[in-house]
Structure formats: structure tokens, C-alpha cells
Image (cartoon, rainbow, N blue to C red; front, side):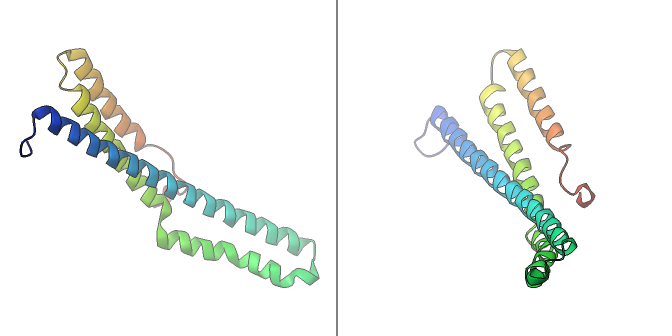
Length: 141
């Protein structure tokens, strides 16, 4: 216990800290996920646009076609360097573990054995199912 704090105050402070960290991790996981998703969409879109423009023989647009054709390779490099998807996975795993700790703090001290059992089972299931979510690049895992 902190200095001059009751057990209830420590409990609430810890709960608040876990909640803050959980929300922060969830936000960062979503941000990295959507960035990775956006980069992938942009790569495919540029590739399609360059192919269509080249096939349609837009001779006046050769520099645009060249730029569009180069964008996917550049974005692959950006994605490889910044590892948006791996960071998203890391933040999701962190968020799920923090959520498990919150449930443990909230429910697993209950006098009702069923509440303790369901909370523990839910936490275990949540961690297990999170690890099976398919990613963009399954080969990287």
C-alpha cells in the first residue's frame, strides 16, 4: 500500500492505471493496424492505376505512370522499416494482457466462485483467440 492509503484507494489507483494503459495500448494498436491497412491499400491502388494507365497507353502521362509504378515498392520499404502490423500485434497483446489483469483485479477476488471461474476462463480464452487472428502477412509470424 502507498503511504497513507487504504487498501480500497490502492485498489482504485491500480485499476485506474491499468485502465489508462489498456486504453492507450488499444488506441496505438488500432492506429498501427489502420496505418498498415492503408499502406497496403495504397500499394494495390497505385499498382492497379499504373497498370491501367500503361495498358491504355497514356503517352502524355509517362512520368505519372512511372511514379505510380514506383510507389508500391517504396511503400513495401516503409512498411518493412516501420513494422506497423507487428507493432499493432504487440499493442493488441499488451492491451489484452492489461484487460486480463483488470478482470482479475475486479472479479477474481469475488466471494462467488462462479464469477472467479468465468473471469479466469474469459481471460484465458481472450488471450488464446487473440493470438489466432489472421494478419496481412501470415508468413511474417
